[in-house]
Structures are given as C-alpha cells and as structure tokens.
Length: 252
Image (cartoon, rainbow, N blue to C red):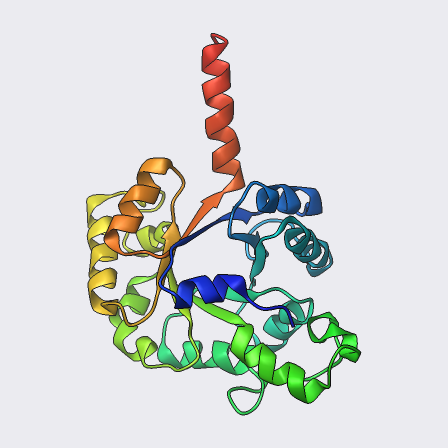
C-alpha cells in the first residue's frame, strides 16, 4: 500500500486542502490533483459516481500527485469494504451520529485486530503480488485515513462519546446538513449554525483534527483561523466563481 502523505501531513500538524469531485470523471480528478491540491475527495454519496468510475478516479488522482479519498454512500460494512478495496488513501463516512456508528466505521475500515474488514488480494493490496497479505493488512491499518462526518444536532450532542472511539483520524463538519438539522436548510452561514460549528471546535479542543468545507478564499482563511486543519473546496463552486469573474469582465 502507498504511503499516505495526507495522513503524514495531518500527523505533523499541517493544514491540507483538497477538492470534492462530484462527477464521474477521471480527467477531472487528475486535473484537480495536478493543480496542486493535497487530496481529491471523490463523492460517491451524492451524484452519479459509481464504484467503477471511482476506481479510475483513484488511479487518476494518484497520477496527478494527490491523495484520493472517497466519500462512501453508506455506513455499511460491505459498502465500505468495496470502496476501500479499490485503493484510496481513506474514506469519509456521512451522517455518523453516535459512538456505535463511529465504531462501525472503524470495524469496516480496519483489519484485525482493529476491525473486521475482509482480506483479499485486491488492488489496495497490490493484487496480492507485491507483498504478503500479512504485511499489507498491517500497512493498511496504519495508512488508511478514517474520516467521519459530524452533520446533525444529534451527532453534536453525542460528540464526547464519538471522540472516545479509537481509530477515527479526523472529524469533518458538514455545514449543509448541520444547517438542515438545525432548521436552516440551505443556510450554512446562518449565525446559529456558525455558533454550533464554534461549539464543535470547542468540544473537540484539539483531540482530533477537524475538517470542513471552504468554498472561497475568505472561508479558507476563516476556517484555518478557527482551527480546522483539512479544508475541502468543490469543483462546481470553483468553476462557477471563475466563470462569473470571466463573464463579468466580458460584460455578461
């Protein structure tokens, strides 16, 4: 298994920035990587990206020099297994609302003795020809980045217990679903939603790295100042911002 440079940077206390790619395009994933982002976040929760498309996007991200991550569609052991088997550097699991659900993520993502992930000579394991599987499972447990999303009031209320779950590498605050959970759908910047985000940061208090979205340069600066260490933009937002600037210059 490849050395996970993204995990190394986080462990060293560095901040990292990447980009959601919500479309099934290996070319777009490679372009995002070649632009200099630390990671490409392949979104298989929303949109049409299948596991077959994600496979090629993982390869393209690696070719471009970024760590591929996959946001899986469900916190289900066999679902997580299949996405990890294609060889990303880690997974992000949405809607983790309790310690039991967090433990389920770790069980699915880690091999014995840390979890129950099934062992096979898949791409993640170098197809079983590069090293003994016994060595691969040790490397995979050390290198795989496990991210759970905190995106509901319920998850925030149970955050102290979630923090106690071993094997979680990073908590990712999802502002859109958090806003919806609080009764402000489509308003992630609502003052009460942002106050809840501040509450999450205070509750975590550095025990784990925190990640969130940062669609603009201003948001990047704000989230870094708050203590977030992993920031994710979105290809759609970046394209829209660049297009509007260009069209405005053309008088459109």
